[in-house]
Amino acid sequence: MKKIVIQGLGYVGLAMMTFCAGARRGKKYRYNVVGIEKNTPKGLKIVSNINSGKAPEIVDDKKFSNFYSKLIKDKRIKVSTNNSEYLKADIIFVCSNCDFNFTKNKVEIESYIKNIEQISKKIKKDCLLIIQSTLPPGTTKKILIPLIKKNLNLRGIKNFYLCHSFERITPGKDYYYSMRNVERIVGGINKESIKITKKIFKDIFGLNSNKIIEFDTPTESETCKIIENSYRATNIAFIEEWRKFCSNNNLDLEKILNSIRQRKTHSNIMRSGIGVGGYCLTKDPLFAKASSKQILKKKFDFPISSRAVEINKKMTPDIMLEIKKKFSKRLLRKKVLLIGVSYREDTNDTRYAPAEKVFNFLKKVGCKLSFYDPIVNHWSHTNTYSVEKKYLKDFEVYVYLTKHQLFKNLKIAYKNKSLILDLNHVLDKKKRLEISKNKKYESYFIGSKE
Image (cartoon, rainbow, N blue to C red; front, side, top):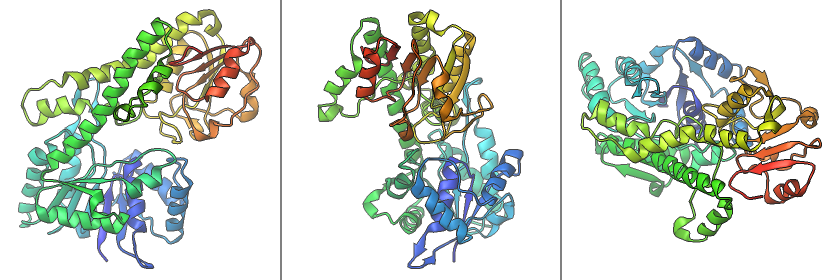
């Protein structure tokens, strides 16, 4: 039985380890699988949490939780901080993050390189490395491959295989489905690397060949991820521009956008919202310029992608400033409930969530803030826990931020003179109409005249 090592057990690595551990041929499991984390306080905590046997609270996806629990029962989930696990690995998935330093405006490539160097000093001949990290285009070819070759040559090893294949997980209730069915991008250093990687993906996910897209180089795969997320970030920034225009001129943006979506060529136009969050869209468009400056050494500014990040970064404060001007007396020192604090629906991931900026803004105007989000439960930004459902009626201002499925039928007995702000289309049209027509409340629905 071949051995797979998953390096990095965060949002991507934990899912990849789970699917590798669950891969079967008939009734028998295909691979010996182990997950590796760094021997740091954070890494040790991750290992401890996984070894506790509890299902990970990454997403509100019962199918994934049930799948994971079955593997725990079968003793298939194994994790460690011991780097000696790399010595006998046939396949290594590298799932650690390559971070962006917003203060220095650069990719922290050095720490990522150290990680690859550590791995390359351990791997055996003919090992396959599958890099799933989001990287500035050119990183694998220009930096990682020469580094791996150098460390292997020192041990008299000539042959290894390598592909870049970025993750495409959809957070939330489609988490399991997206891992199982999404198209996989594979950019290899040679045809044999691509061939072996395709077989691995077919074994793990049962994918057909038409679900695996081949690129001639890792750089094309790296570029694909950056363009994919830059496109989405730019689309969001574009709508924010028109949201401001429509807001200033009392126009119904959502009605306008719905009419545009009737055209098949424009069906994926974004809608207005409170802001961009999560680990990817907040930084990935900046990897393009970082590639030009730090990796390829060929100057290119990527003005549209860079500007999109700037617009999206300002989106939440700009919207909150508009809210303050419109409802200044209704906000000052009020008791406020934030409804949903994760960056995306049906996940507990709060990284760079717009809720943080909303919280900070309202705190500055003297509001007393609490939050309700059973999926997140504990919010590290405030080091507090979600209020219980029975206390939802006790607030003066309600700010809807995350469209969790469990909020669909949420009923709150608002007090008279409550201010209700739906900043992310959490409430359905019927509920918005009921609120807007009720003279007991004041309300604001982003992108709408209601």
